[in-house]
Length: 307
Image 1 (cartoon, one colour):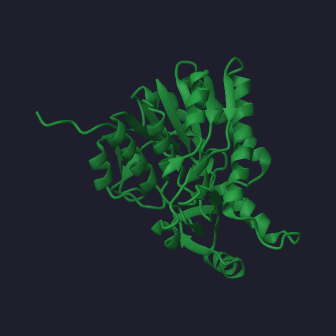
Image 2 (cartoon, rainbow, N blue to C red):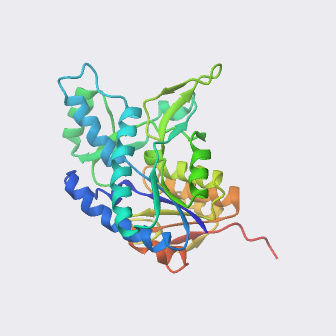
């Protein structure tokens, strides 16, 4: 079976942790264990988030006196792909020594007129108090928004239209390679309508939506979205909270999950299932093997025709 795995940015850096390199190296061991349990029997493609990491690099870039201007988000996204890809590749090499592994810098085409550029919703970086966030917003010209635990920077998150390296990823898979790609949703680029020339743009693409598009392009059988909760929940964080164990795309959409948290994951799972007839699932990193075998997580299946 061909499985596309989408790892949350918190797989390397959990909420509240210091963003030190050693912390991220330690966290990656859990990722390697989860992936290895599946890689021995299945073709695997790994994508990953980069919200905490790109936020950290953006703060560092903005504070660097040697720069006349901070680095743009597309280049910072490319840096996170290299850093996280290297951590994943090295750790997976240790637990799967006979497995070919490649980390590929990947570019995702978005539309210049995507309305997301005028309505930023993607949280990046660490959580701040309101006063801290307001000060940073004023000094760095950031937009800020309220997350579940505080205030964070929000940036544009346009819809992924096309993954430039999809053919190369397919070729690597045909050679038996475990591929790490499309990190942070891919480096966001806009293609000139006349020449096709590429230019980077100030955005962070949702990695789950890119993972769904990639899984569709690769004709994957299963889209596995791994996060820090064991299931999708209705009424999350309230006394009425209930796990969703099984759902169709329509049922998942009707639940109305928040755009800044579970919403993109639910939409990505729904899109993949609708467009391919495959199965998607959302659940906890440590339960990856059990999720694929139907014993954990929220499974999203095609609509069942009426009898």
